Length: 144
View (cartoon, rainbow, N blue to C red):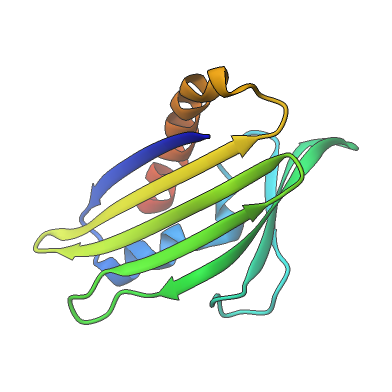
């Protein structure tokens, strides 16, 4: 299993950083050949289901995820969102924490990925690619 961690500091208040990083459909805007669709009605909560579809035409794969913990930030308290990846190709967990700071917010994204077709020896490379891809996603979401 590949594990990686990304941290970003933002001048945004925690509530706004939270809103941006949990805008699931926008996650696909930065990942090449990927779109994200939410399968449950808003608002996001525990039990929300969404799918990241990566591919070109009929060639690709789905990465279905479920929100298993949803605690938005409030009154000086950190927000925590935990996801479970339940695909046939990609499995794992992700945790997104948004903590208020005196200057805005601190976002911590930790991902644990298991890709069925990759041997465990590829985990360091997968973690490196994950840090780069999801780091770009996080930066894009927080910046705009």
